[in-house]
Image (cartoon, rainbow, N blue to C red; front, side):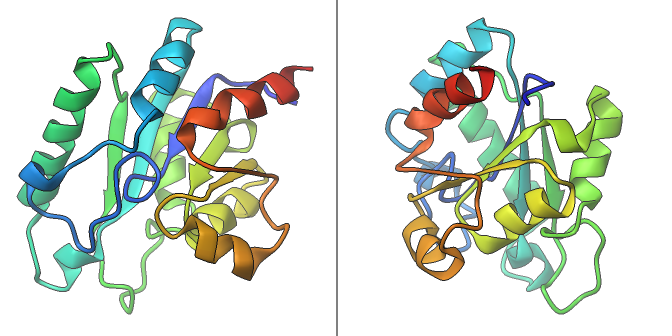
Length: 181
């Protein structure tokens, strides 16, 4: 049952078009229909939190400042649709570095839950990679796999592991309506 109006979003491949190790804000593109869907949900009282693994920082490919500039660009693009991301949580570690925040570990989600006072198990987690779905599984949240980004590949690997699978973020309302029923 849906208890909170909090949507936890992956960034690359879910909210914005996947660009391998994106660090240039000029390359940011929203996935078509994503902003419009979020705008409709925001009017209904939904909050949006982005959790993103950014191993390019840990690999020395770009800096946390570059990541923040990408987030500023996303915010600018979403403002055109009156959408606000409540917060971005970033795990900059290299995948080989032990980390409690790097998805699928729940560290970023726990930080978000503490900051915004929600139960991690009562939210919807949307993403395109196994780490996103596994994060949701690790905290018993509702999981939604999008087929954008790496989602189609992930779907083939995970089969029915996600609670819901949708073509892209523009279809998230159908999941929410089903959960409300």
